[in-house]
Image 1 (cartoon, rainbow over the protein chains, first blue to last red):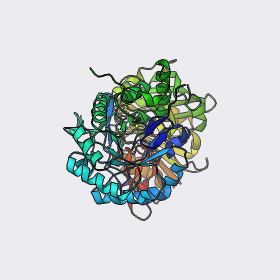
Image 2 (tube, rainbow over the protein chains, first blue to last red; image 1 turned 135 degrees about the vertical axis):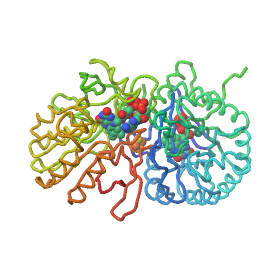
Image 3 (spheres, chains in turn brown, purple; image 1 turned 90 degrees about the horizontal axis):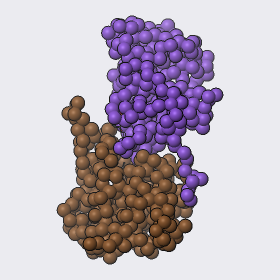
Image 4 (cartoon, chains in turn green, orange; image 1 turned 90 degrees about the vertical axis):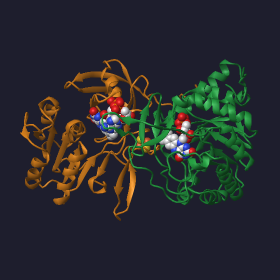
Length: 303
Length: 262
Ligand SMILES: Cc1cc2nc3c(=O)[nH]c(=O)nc-3n(C[C@H](O)[C@H](O)[C@H](O)COP(=O)(O)OP(=O)(O)OC[C@H]3O[C@@H](n4cnc5c(N)ncnc54)[C@H](O)[C@@H]3O)c2cc1C
Ligand SMILES: Cc1cc2nc3c(=O)[nH]c(=O)nc-3n(C[C@H](O)[C@H](O)[C@H](O)COP(=O)(O)O)c2cc1C
Ligand code: FES
């Protein structure tokens, strides 16, 4: 068995696999299936300053090798998260990445400030949600706005800060550089790609929000490309995600430059996906004589 | 593998497949552990083989603890249900179950009216079994070709009333007509219903007018099926009149009709 430990800056994870924000709630539903301590970490559901009810259903549509969602950041708000969910998560013996979002830089900073006095391990600042009208993707698509919100959050907390990037941009490396210059300790990517489906019979978009975020196997090649580009452009650790369905996908994303890997849609399909992916990655490492998972990061040999 | 001890087996053998109408199939799945836990109103989440990212939610139509099996009755609507309908006895099916929150089960002596519309009739069968002759089952279909499960309901001892939109079988008209009559003669303790939204709306309105508790099974497009991804939201009101989104897969599929924003 390979040594699966990896590092993101000063944080050590027991393995590189982290359920992605939005598919794993605050962990409770999955605890019925297996101990959360088996996971490398958990990225919690995107949490905002005040409670948000989210968008009207339907919020999900199936697509070739993937899916669209338009949840719209439904969450109970940061105070409820800190009071009701975080203490339990922190007792689960795994690394907790608190995913946060907000309509303004001030809201993001305020949320981060509240987390600063908790024992959460890392803040994952989502500047890339395609499903909310204000903030969200708007931060993630301009270097100036991305840097501004990162700076505001950086000033509000000493916690390790990871900024989650949007793929819906012309140059993801420019945004990555901007948030690193503004103080990000790590970057994670990719969030969902903006997409749409129409029901031919009713001529209505399948999603009530009309548009939504594309995820799942279909986006994997885009994720590999963007992780590779960003890993080459910045010197901070990269957490990769987007369409990882099995252990070999995780190995590929690490080769492209990821230090750890988040898994979203695969868990929507199969609650045991994170365990299968950890096992699959371990198998691949053993089969290929790699003793340490951490040694895989960035080992692609580009032409 | 390191995690074998934690990874539940999600593949179960198909014991039988029966065609009920041109588009509706009955499938019996061998799954003793699931049958042991399942209760009326819960559903299973099936992943068809092929290029499918999402599972398909299907209500449980029969729970046979002795045989260690569940029966599902489903209509072919699109690609996923077509793949499921092509399964043969001995094939395996990928199933996460049992899921969701079911119907309230009162004592067997309670008087209960069950209402099913179209492909919403199957989940009422376990309730008919529970209440037997103390229940009335009112089913509604478009026409004779879509009628299903009438013999199964009769076998439970439940009084059955059949309606079709065009009068080609049973009485012509909507289920709400015999429902109104049954409410006044039976004075039921509870009404349970599953079917299309307009039907449920009518049933819930009648129940409310007559002050009878009513539970309805709702549908919404689903992802995880266990309450984590938050895609299956339905709008509800709580006791204080505040609206909120609850989740069909976890808080439902069965809801108190008073909670639902119609
Ligand atoms: C709690 C619950 C219980 C159900 N019980 C039954 C049952 O007992 N028998 C039965 O025949 N049908 C039942 N349905 C409806 C059934 O889930 C859909 O008909 C089925 O998912 C359609 O899949 P498809 O691939 O054939 O259609 P497609 O249109 O190709 O499906 C595309 C996507 O939309 C989803 N979808 C499409 N229609 C529905 C729908 N009505 N409800 C939810 N998701 C939908 C699919 O799951 C899939 O993700 C139930 C639905 C829910 C939510
Ligand atoms: C249902 C759903 C909800 C999501 N919610 C969030 C969220 O709240 N915050 C966030 O940063 N990303 C959210 N995401 C994006 C995922 O974390 C991930 O970036 C994306 O789905 C790509 O990975 P995947 O292909 O493995 O799913 C969500 C994705 C899905 C499918
Ligand atoms: S389907 Fe995921 S929360 Fe209901």
